[in-house]
Length: 65
Picture 1 (cartoon, helix red, strand yellow):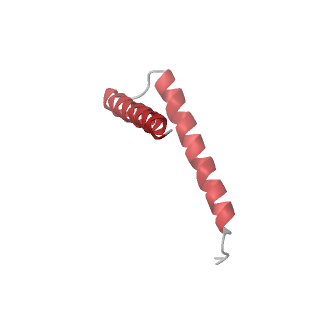
Picture 2 (cartoon, rainbow, N blue to C red):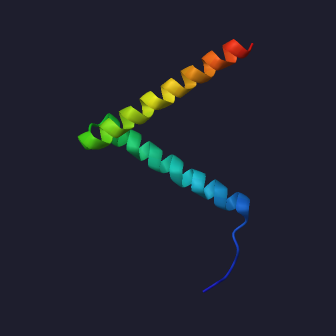
């Protein structure tokens, strides 16, 4: 067994690639209706919170300007 060290940049690149693949797979499953209803509900809640945060950030930026 080798004890080679993976450079930080490579590890980050590989982790991002794995996350991108997982997201693409989740999106494909979601589009095809293969997600469990509980998972769909969780995703909708997350998406709603993200929209609310973006909207709040835009409003705060406008007030600050």
